[in-house]
Length: 113
Image 1 (cartoon, one colour):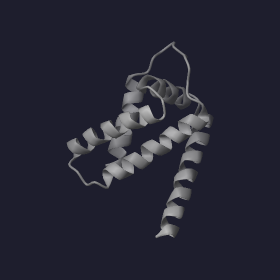
Image 2 (cartoon, rainbow, N blue to C red):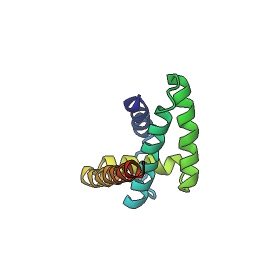
Image 3 (cartoon, rainbow, N blue to C red):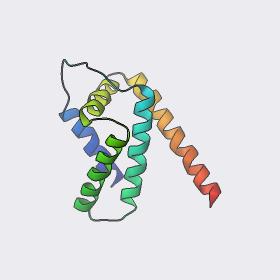
Image 4 (cartoon, helix red, strand yellow):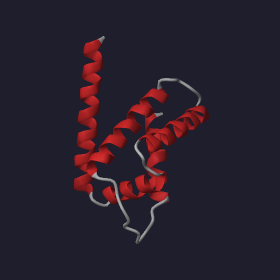
């Protein structure tokens, strides 16, 4: 299921690519924060153990909430994601930070139990 939701995000980002419009993109730090939120949301929705169509609907609502929380629009996120896809070294450093942050949070959560 995790791969399915992440694949949907990736396909949306690629399908909505705006060629020739560089516009503003999210900073690496903003991208890291938003991706952390998205991945945690994905895990939380997945843990609800809903049917696939329900999972997708709940995740869409969560995704909208996170965009609002992070003061973003879907077009800025998509444009930024596409930018970083075209710059693999930057994307790699972003995902290293995402994975490290989620690992630290997970360790803290486990220690608190």
